[in-house]
Image 1 (cartoon, one colour):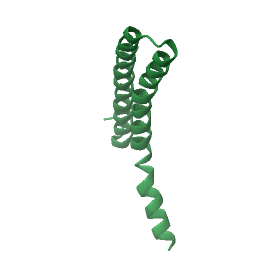
Image 2: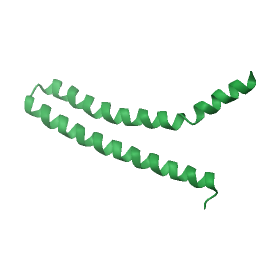
Image 3: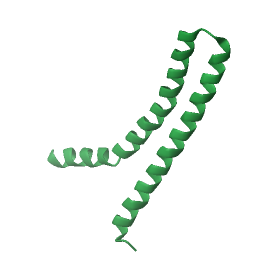
Image 4: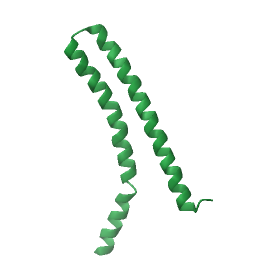
Length: 86
């Protein structure tokens, strides 16, 4: 019984970084575009809608790129620790 619990915990520990990466990337998609939609509803101007969506999209691209860079760096550091800094 205890071995099964330990096995389940070890299964979830390797999923935690992946799930955090997924959550961060998803938030970079939803937050800027959501703010752009809310801002355009307040101003009620159609030309500002397209500008806000474009700016939100650019912020989203930057955020996803940044998160991928961080995640890749973390994976490389973990790999170095695992392999004994070869």
